[in-house]
Length: 353
Image (cartoon, rainbow, N blue to C red):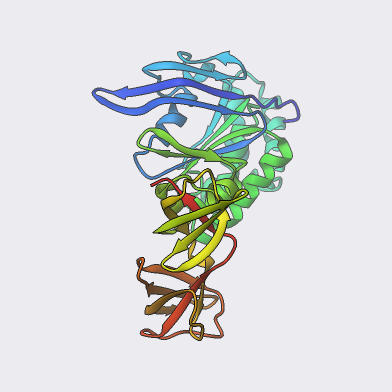
């Protein structure tokens, strides 16, 4: 797999209709070669339809799709230089791992000998060099996933497509395999388009994340950009929960905005906000609770839940209820405790109304 050449992906004004329903509205997106870009969003947002159009399993109603600079808009799937890893893995149960990986190569015209050599190399690349003789039923879920990735990669595609690749794994194995996929992509340098509805997964593996909503791009950027600088309440809440409350922008000082939240003043990046009423997104871990202070935003603990390495609170305040995650587990506050709320420097953002 040493000759793999990563390709770019470009969607230009792509629209997809299913009858009278518009699944994708005027999508324009560029994916740079050698990057892993995740299409993220809730069910029905259009991410899977976008991936299927890139794979050639669906064709756009209008617009153009380019892979490696070549217009592939109307090409069938087998004429596109892409490989796909499906949610179900789609391994042949009667073939061992080596035969599964070699199958696509033999179907593409490689001799049995060369297909076997490439398949052995592919299994080695994904850490399964000594497991080629095992049937899928004799492999763990994570190992089956790696066989599916190897089978796709040995074809040396310009772009690897991954459709909810970890959804069949348990939570602990998902963390392990997503790390392996990211390490493999960075080591081999292939272009990958990854579809998931899991925010943690997207944050862990991506160079860039494209969040979709109702067939459109709601926001695109690096994982840190989307988490720290959401443009809307939808993005703020979808990328890891957020408390969205009203605030007042008092003034701008350089690139900072001075805001008032129920009598509590705080500074944060202005993000081109205007003086006056605004909306503030606050991450649950960015709220500081102090039962002894008299300054800040006053509130009262409604609920308290001890979860081992942190305590979760719901706090009632004059500007609305806050969901708070407190890692100071040595101190657990009881319901009806009066507290003062303050904010950390990170995890707050002014957002569009």
